[in-house]
Figure 1 (spheres, rainbow over the protein chains, first blue to last red):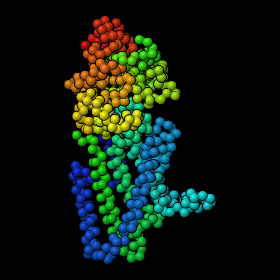
Figure 2: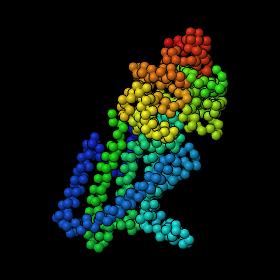
Figure 3: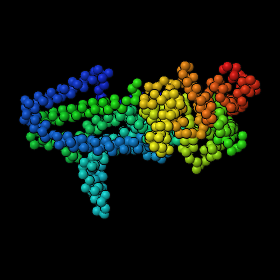
Figure 4: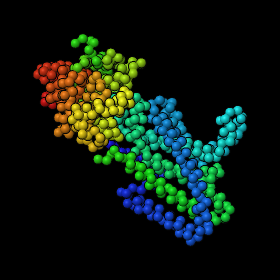
Length: 275
Length: 246
């Protein structure tokens, strides 16, 4: 029956607090209140440098969100097509999708970032100024390179999430839709994907949070995210301990709040299961 | 009956799973308005035959034509042909993310481009017909098995099919719910709907069928009227089958 609910455990994101998991649920509150208390305490007792660091970071928070959201959007699009490709009966499409997943998963994200920005950057530097695309590639902003690299990397993981989500839907759903006259594509978009979402969303939420944390890697490409802003502050003031303490706490608060958002959305998506 | 009235024509259809004969040299015509009930032991190929008619299963040999069109021909539009055939499954297969009403209106709106208001009006009329209009706003999870199957029948009817295919529609139901589903099917039969029904409900077969088809091991062994079937069965395996279930 279609009522079965498969939970995909990707396991590399932040933990989603659930009320029935008392331990985790309490830990979420302890971590959040603890982090906020420490931030408040430090900023009140030692405004210099803690309050100064905190005031310096918001620009970086915006950039981190910008990179994360753009990357996840690219990853979702790539992931949808990859997931569909991985279940495709067309052998060529299937092979292309599977190869993409295998290759991308076998190369560390940091190496992929370097590859797209520095290695391909060198290749692009030799392009002629003959059209707009070449000119853009020659002067590719680090933020664009970062989003492309992270999107491609997470797209491969997302592809597996989409594949598992689609495969979790009972085959009877496909048969019912096809027997009514829906085409294969219509069946996917009207019947399968709307149901697969509730299986897909929790791991996508986890991937989003994991991606947000991994986005700190883009600071190496001189993208002014949270970590980069911290580095800039520390290199001027030499307050390494205080700066990175604040950076870590800010990341923690953000990921904790996001995990709450994700779990709330997950509950909402289960509306039609409620009796 | 004349050839022009044939809506389904199955000619020498065979299907193999390795060396297993799921269907072997099956030929069967179904005429407009006719009610054909297919019976047989499990694994006899009766569901495979029914599912082959709308190509949920593909046959390896032979031809199946629906409304004069070969469903396996390279240029045939299987999606258009399927719109003319309503299918009811053993496991209901309602769309759980849609309300009962939306289950009925989705295909007419998306595929036949019927305006939403009109589609909902037709859907409500069908829900009333299957006796479940008060449940139009709920999700399938809130329905009993018998209610689900009645909605599934209404969903198939919403496409105004020329023939209804029933694949063991009562086999997944609790005994007390079988009657309500059979009642809907009997009403449908009396209204003149063309029906092909795979079932173990012999009472239904006796009451409704114009012809009963007995299948075993992928082959049709006997075809006849209910009277012939239950009073004067000929094939030894049919006699044995009937003695086991009656």
